[in-house]
Length: 111
Picture 1 (tube, helix red, strand yellow):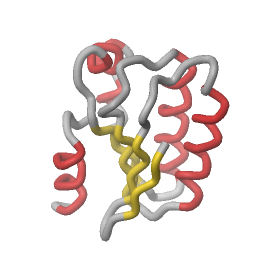
Picture 2 (tube, helix red, strand yellow):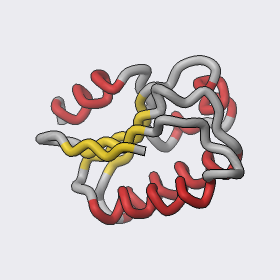
Picture 3 (cartoon, helix red, strand yellow):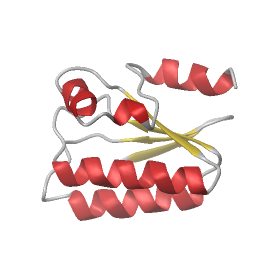
Picture 4 (cartoon, one colour):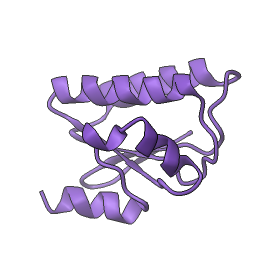
């Protein structure tokens, strides 16, 4: 996991699948990401081809906590095969999903 701070947004780039082996680490990283970063947050999943149901719960929980703190978490790198998972569980009803990091950054620059 790699944290990238840009002018307007903070990006957490996930560089591996999220499984039972690293689920707890992912939860800790997401909590730290939310508490340490500014208003606009991007979770970049471009290099992720698999994540388990616990990871989905962690992402959803972080998105809701972000809203309570007047922050916004969006997802980037949402492409097959994981895009189907996010559609099935209706993540697009409570957070924004972008195919590329560039599109996520443009979203925040247009606010």
